[in-house]
Length: 145
Image (cartoon, rainbow, N blue to C red; front, side, top):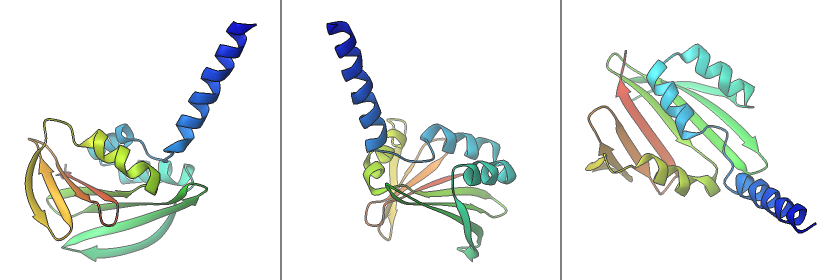
């Protein structure tokens, strides 16, 4: 009997901790998007997770396509951008997940490089990550394939 109660408590804790910091796109999926740079596959996955196309724009010489999802945990925004040199993903997760996302992406192999506006940028040998605490965006830049 006690064993069943213990399992029930573990299941409840797992259930609630999973949804406390809910987001639609995991860090590993973002890294996969950056690796493959397959925009059609990225868009298919975003749509399957409830995102919808919002707008296309050109900023800083990059073509940007914005996708938005509003769920029970808040609003998420993911932007796919590219130019002739770089591939970019900007992810604005739910407010409750932002700090966790920031901690997961800024690993020890990233070094602070510079600040631009409200964003601080960190680099390693293959990627640049921008963190904007004011608006809750995380920017991922890699070389375009």
